[in-house]
Length: 178
Image (cartoon, rainbow, N blue to C red):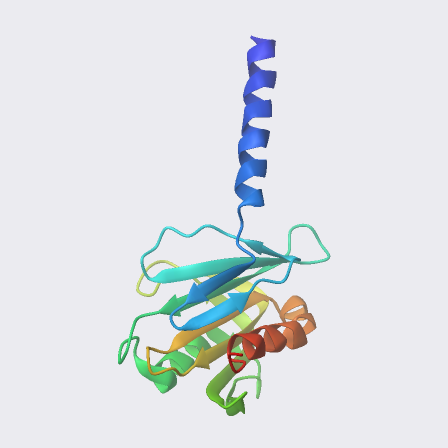
């Protein structure tokens, strides 16, 4: 029986390794192509609404930030303002922390949404779990083929630490095609 357990564990390890080897370095969400940084992990998704998900490991092994991607097609998804307000409403934000900042990145209109405080994690309309000292950094990328919604949530310190990498990641997806 012990040999079977060892064999089963070895097979699971091989299967897990094979799945990890197939993790995409690039992936499409709507009309955009994203280049996944090597240090960001690919998380398989099984929701028709969620188009992709990544995880950024923190310095502490139990800390991580999640980056989720949504695309609903042209004229769908609720628009920039409604989504920015909904994202911020998921937080009991610290005073003055909530920001909605329209920008032009590589000629593309991108609205950057950020806040920090207590995060009510969970599906809209369902039960939530309150996570203290969390941060949000999101980008709503406007596109004629439908807006792309990219949202990072995690421990506030980790989200702040990843701010530049996240913005570089967004900029590379909206870079002019050569």
